[in-house]
Image (cartoon, rainbow, N blue to C red):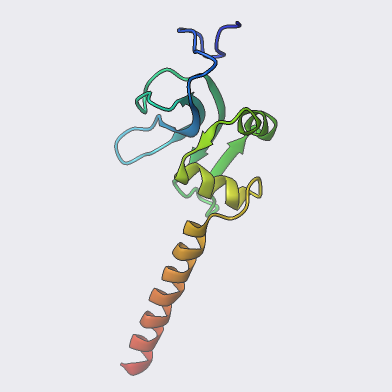
Length: 124
């Protein structure tokens, strides 16, 4: 059995794997690696493979930057790896998976709050 890409410990074949975020930012500046880990590993635990990065902070052009290795993500999904909810939302927005229901709920809430703000401005 080959060693994991990140080096370190040998990971068993039967252990449940999950695609999720690993936090690599600092205070007030979050940055995430999209990684494959064993399901019971802590967030900063041993990484089997890094599949991409996500920067949730908006840059000067109003963009949130995402880099994905779609070929390896499809490989791990085919191997039966689970996907965390936050990663499923991001992969749905990128077009790799169907759009997650949480995305629809977030859009609905933001439309509703903007409509309330417009009504308040019109009334005053």
